[in-house]
Image (cartoon, rainbow, N blue to C red; front, top):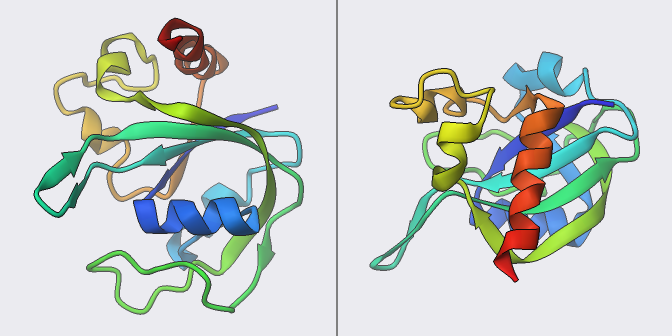
Length: 150
């Protein structure tokens, strides 16, 4: 089993929840092709400005992959600014394992996460990616934050 961090926007998070589907742009075909049914996917929302407020980067849910990758050209995802006419054609079906009541803030985890080698320029480990594999201990560390929130 592999563990993935899936990077998305607030708008596309709503679509993921509604349709139980994860999709990536054409250029990330090789990455999503490594996902297998049973793999765990953490949904990471990028920092976004909503009105005057900045919503910090956060992890909002765990999903499990329930299909192999497939190609589908129906436009269901919203295209983030600067991505042209992308339709995120490479997709997998997913099912929710845990949609968190309260998101897990990402920035406080950075010093402890193994997959982030450069702690000062940490966003470079996620920027320009749709998803990336993370070690099991990082996955467990992120989920351990849930029990500390109550």
